Length: 125
Image 1 (cartoon, rainbow, N blue to C red):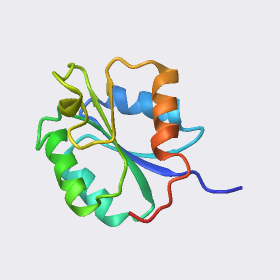
Image 2: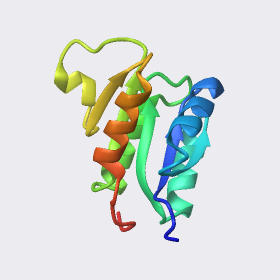
Image 3: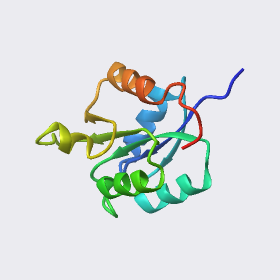
Image 4: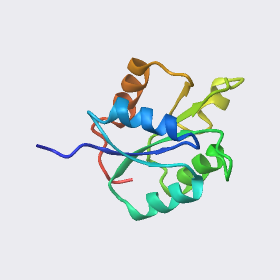
């Protein structure tokens, strides 16, 4: 049996992280954290991560800053941005991420986007 792709999910709401794990655990292994600093440490220490799911509104450094730093250090890492507020344009929506989903999201919707972005992605970033 092959190993499942590893994703890092970042959200300050643990309920959202638990929901993502419940929805995606069949196809992916999820590492989760509630803050940007921890996310950056996890990314630095685990080469197995093939994708990032992040909320845009995280109290410490925020998801937008996380995306900027990830793009600088891991430019090929696919990113799914989440937010409870709707961005004013598609450019604002992705903020250099690869896809955007508004919360609350549909289960089938996040599965489809995760499969498209992260399914079969090689571990090198």
